[in-house]
Length: 218
Image (cartoon, rainbow, N blue to C red; front, side, top):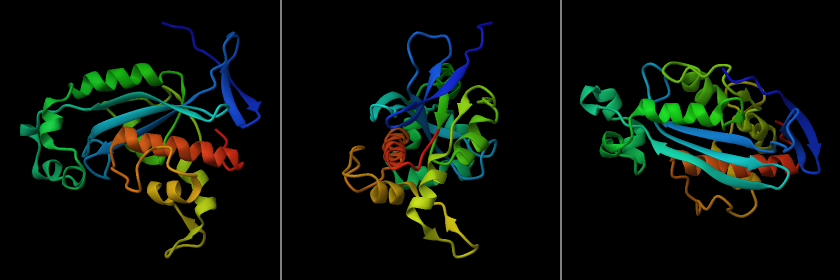
């Protein structure tokens, strides 16, 4: 078994970052993951059908695509709930794409290799991690270093009043991106396409923008 790596936070001119203790080269990147799924219930009722990962360098303010894949399943075994999922009705995702994609377990193995021992976050970690990556068949609880949720950091900047409780409600990704990020560095041209890699890029640039104004720390 490989030895465990230890990370430490370091201060940079653009905010906090990470480096591996004892390593000559600093790890100054955070992985930002997004999933697209068949529904909001989480595993095992729902499954991930699309995953995208970017690497953010907060010190340099850069975003790099790391991984993207549709997950393959035998949809002949799916019930109507899965086959009629919102993702297939409202995006360019299709059942045919799922049927021809690499097997889900193969994609999961790829993601596990990429995320192992790395600083990782998402836009709504309670959803991506809590309802999927920490559950079977991903089983990644304790597998990586969970960083602060980008969505939570954006909440106090967007300041959208909740109709149901005191305080602010969590903003949707496209709203937070359009309000906080200057220009369109993720290249969405005004429309969120709800594909995993594209959404991961949006969240990554949002994290950089929040970090620059002192509202995001890993």
